[in-house]
Image: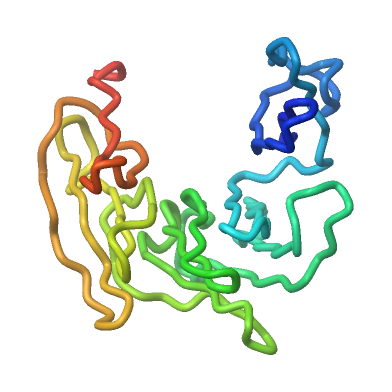
Amino acid sequence: MLGSLNRAGTGLSFILVTFALGASTLPANADYVAPTGYKVMPLGLSPNEFGVSAGGRLVVANTNFSAKTITFDLYDSWMPSRQLLKSATLTAPQSASFAPFSTRLVFSDENTVYFGDNGATSTLYRIDFTSPAPSPVALKSVSFPQGVGLGKPGTILVSGSASFGAGQIQLSSYDIAGNTLAAVAGPTGVGFVGGTGLSQAGTAVVLDDGGMFD
């Protein structure tokens, strides 16, 4: 469930993901205890994935496994007073054995969101919410996409697996203007692939779970 973590008197807020047992309420049933000086504020959402833009917009993804769809809702803010702006839906092909399942959602600007489907299609997608009827647009096939993150200006990083199993981590970079996907590293690693992003030094990084499921 999504909530926010606020520091009194500082104006600082962080999006907080909690895992609750029983009813989906915060903070009564959550196993997260806020540090001294902070408080947890429930946002009333329990998405499968989410993303927050630089300007504070919120996008959430909810998978319907029986219908084999993902619904993406864009809000004007992550705050409890947020308003729904637009929605988009990804539907798995009729031939798909699995429902689509979204990776992390990443904003490239206030209206454009990128994500990978790690279920039905193994594909990198873009949603342009400025469209009158926004819909996910398939960009490039990615083998078992697991993470999507902002790369260097004009690029999106995508982590995935060359094949199912440990030690198959691969990292690619999608060029937005050129609509091209280039390999950055891999197959490599010792464990299973996780998320990706840029370090403070501007180096692309990808999570390796260290083989804990070997």
